[in-house]
Picture 1: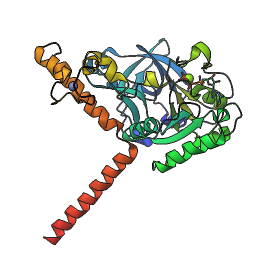
Picture 2: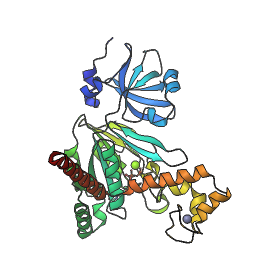
Picture 3: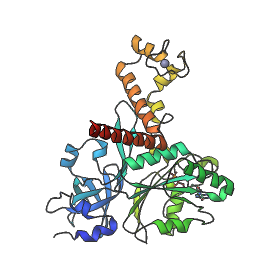
Picture 4: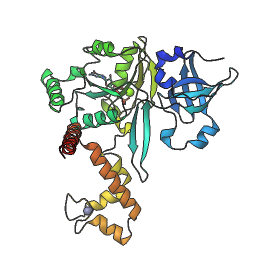
Length: 356
Ligand SMILES: Nc1nc2c(ncn2[C@@H]2O[C@H](COP(=O)(O)OP(=O)(O)OP(=O)(O)O)[C@@H](O)[C@H]2O)c(=O)[nH]1
Ligand SMILES: [Mg+2]
Ligand SMILES: [Zn+2]
């Protein structure tokens, strides 16, 4: 029987996907709610069900970003007698959030897809960091979604501190809406509720312990997601280990995420150092403290490459990845300035053409 796809609109389906879906005649459309190794939890207008990837799909798609992630729409074959549906294809993503995984092969890992908004959460209590915020904003922009910024745990800081964060954001030229809130006093929670629209998808990201799951539980109105105290032995531990999509009573769709380290924004202090420990250890012996290991004299890294202690390929990957990450760390303001300068350049080039 032909599936009535209009019923999927409340799960985020739209004509944009309808125009791109290439499902086979017997396939249904469903949205990925969670991914658990080779098992997926899907949702359609009738509820949730489990599914696996069809062998033919796996055969054709081996890169991790080609596999369905939370928020994706898929074409699935499902018979009432089967325990599992069989996923035959992935429908093109409208937006996404992805990270680069560090290592000798640079790969993009999808975090979630088809969100309308990414809600970047930072806590006012020892978490606020402008550079990290800017990196998230760039990442969201690159994936085509919109951002909101949430500053949590306002109950733990003086109003002056909270205000200084707001002015830091403002001074950096960030125009994304910001909401301050406390999950304890409830201040600001209604502002978040007002922002959530039915049928739209909101993806929550931010460091571990900032209160993402606590907030989502408040929005659901019950203790659905596991949360944990960050005091004592819980410090730095991840409470949320699974990414999942939930439907709120009001009709908005939310995706909870594990904290930042799991999320692994690639930066100088993240994956690079781990995958290239041999290089970063050697760097301590370079003559110059700010050695770039490219053409400086008495560079311990290039010497190790020459002697064969470190392979040429490994070294090149390190340089390449570091350059990418430097770009990635370029602030939002710097990127905007670059765009602006480029715009001016195009204008003057056009003018030159006219004048000649
Ligand atoms: N004082 C205060 N504590 C909060 C607030 N929001 C959350 N917490 C507490 O902070 C701890 C961590 O909250 P979680 O919701 O588990 O944090 P999370 O962002 O989901 O963390 P991960 O799942 O590890 O990424 C819990 O003990 C919460 O009770 C807040 O606004 N104020
Ligand atoms: Mg959590
Ligand atoms: Zn060096």
